[in-house]
Length: 151
Image 1 (tube, rainbow, N blue to C red):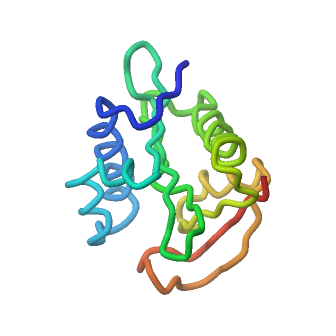
Image 2 (image 1 turned 120 degrees about the vertical axis):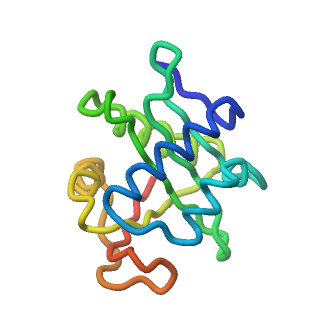
Image 3 (image 1 turned 90 degrees about the horizontal axis):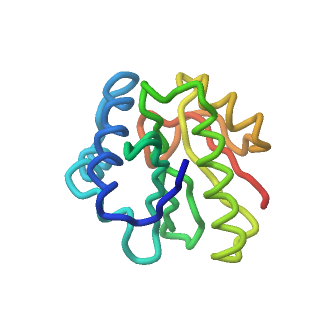
C-alpha cells in the first residue's frame, strides 16, 4: 500500500469514488458537483488530495482542506467498494492526521458528516474523533454531525 499526495493521476478517481457514495446515500449538492467537475481544486492553495494505491489502483481517497476560518477539514473520504473491509479508511485517516500534525503543525482537524453514514461514524469514533455538533448544519443540507480530532 502506498499513499500519494496531490498526484494528478488520482484526481479523477477522487471525484468518481466520492460522487458514487454521495449518490448512493444522499442527493448531490452544488459543492459535490463542483468537486466532481473540478477535483483539482481540492489540491490547490495548500489543500491536499490523498490516495491509497494498491496494485496500481486507487483504493481510497480523501482531502484535507482549509476552510474560510483557516481551520482544516478532513473531507470527501471514500474507499472503493472492492477494497472495503481492509482497513484502508483507517490507514488513510492516520496518514492525513499525521500529515496535518507533522507537516502543517496543526493540533486539531475536523470533519462534517451525516449519521446515515453509520460505518464511517463508527470508524471516526474508533479513531478518537469526538462529536462537537449534532443536528442540521448551516453549510451542507445533508450534514447532521461534526467531529474533531486533537492531534
